[in-house]
Amino acid sequence: MKTVKAGMTLDTIVMGSMCDESSLMSIPALLDAFQDIAGVHAATAETGVLQLEDKGLFWVVSKMRMVIKRRPLVGEETQLTTWILPPDRISCERDCSLHIGDEMLAYCRCIWAALRRDNGRPEPTTNFYPYPDEEIAPPDDRPFKRMSRNFEGAEEIGRYTIRSVDIDRGGHMNNVNYVRAMLGCFTCEEIAEMDITELDMQFQLQCYEGEAITFVKRDSDTAKMEIGALNSEGKAAFMAAIY
Image (cartoon, rainbow, N blue to C red; front, side):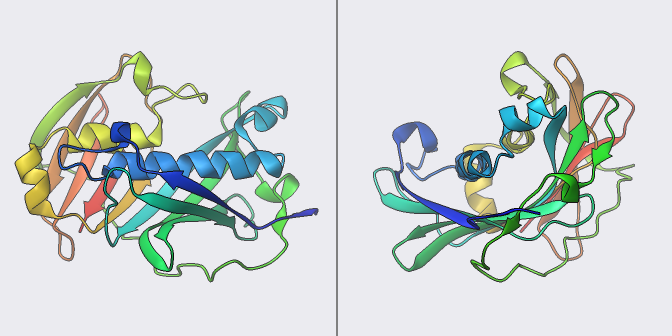
């Protein structure tokens, strides 16, 4: 198995298009930024979107956890960093962080898998995924939150029809757009009152252009709330615990 440079850091600036009504970098923009640098670094390891396409594969994310210490203000200069960990049998971990100097603003742990385009089955990552040449940072070994996929009796908070602008190269709804649509179920005032410091996100099923999804929420024993995005069959395609 070949080795590659484990990580990458890019200097960035928070643009107005990345910000919400408070002129702070929005939560979806943070996730977009992490996804963007992940794609740039993956290409250097020959595992970018187009390179995987040549192998008949496409990336899907199964779990993400983002911790937010502080959202940067428009115009602030920041540093984005991403790094990979050794692959497991059918998954791999990529972590990302956003800093200003020594201050860490946000951190994201991501578990990825590659599916075959011809049959949708997972491809063993050890067949194509490189090993990092060093350990950039220790993995976040906290377990992801255990959430039931059964949202029966949960409160409906919104409905959303998946549109062309939500679809990525894999042909399904991009993972960040679930979060964008979820937050769109709340007012600016409600989101401010939530004061979100952590999101534990789990992606269960793929959804496609034209599908209607229903967002529901329920109480949680440890989080502020748990939210599910249900497809037309009532199955949870996306789940999130909000802290």
